[in-house]
Image (cartoon, rainbow, N blue to C red; front, side):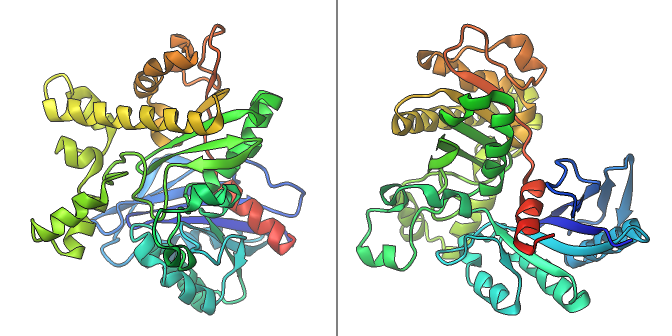
Length: 395
């Protein structure tokens, strides 16, 4: 049996998501044949959750680098497809492609070196797919690998959207607004027309709200503007990241508070956002039950919502109006209360929710009277990456 399989990997510092897709039968099925997630890498005990055994997580020693977890995943994949075909390709989600890498690209040592130079632009994300690429090149050199870039989707934005008001030499050196979460937004260009038809081609804002968060303004299913910029720090307040900040505040922290670059980077990437303001957690699931009795938690959640509402207003201005607002990713898909809080101040735009539909996380949560369609759409970055790899490799 010569069935070709594509493994999509989304490697992070403490987790690895993976999904296995069967190729060679036209368009890949949206749902993977199998997959799972390793969580808690680097802690005393990590857990491997498999899609076919969700109630039976597997404990593993992951005190070593996350290559230990990756090796286990690869072993499980080969065991899974034994007698059912071959692993034809592994595709990696890569957060930053810089100014030279946008299209899906076959992995080589030269590509890994080029992407390693971009680690300072996305230190929370960039190193880990590169480690996976290197391990697979060494252990499975005959398996094709493809890198897909989160920055690619936003190449349709105008130059004035990409530029900073810095000396022209900075633009020439690649200091510009790249935008991120591109695989998620690209998936929406497939999912939204299926659910909403031609309405999806109108003035749409997609809110990708997870531990990282951004908004993307789309017209005719193409990116017009987005809230993240040069790095994954910009824009919205996030779980541990600050979002947009006056650069003068960073200069002050360094000059007057004596913080070095490493200390500032740790503050902005790891100690800010919901965690930094609340002092409790980066996770709304843990914060919401506490807001009635903890003032810092209340302020953190209020600031989180305010930043999203403010940026929706800005992107609506860029679009010249708003026809559709879509929530996706972990928080966007599962937190009805936060969706309601975000939508309430948008009533001036004609946004009106159906409370029952919102509570049920329905595909359409706006009321019939709402002038703006409000939806909830599950993202599928793994399928998007696997589809791009299949097209590149012709499998």
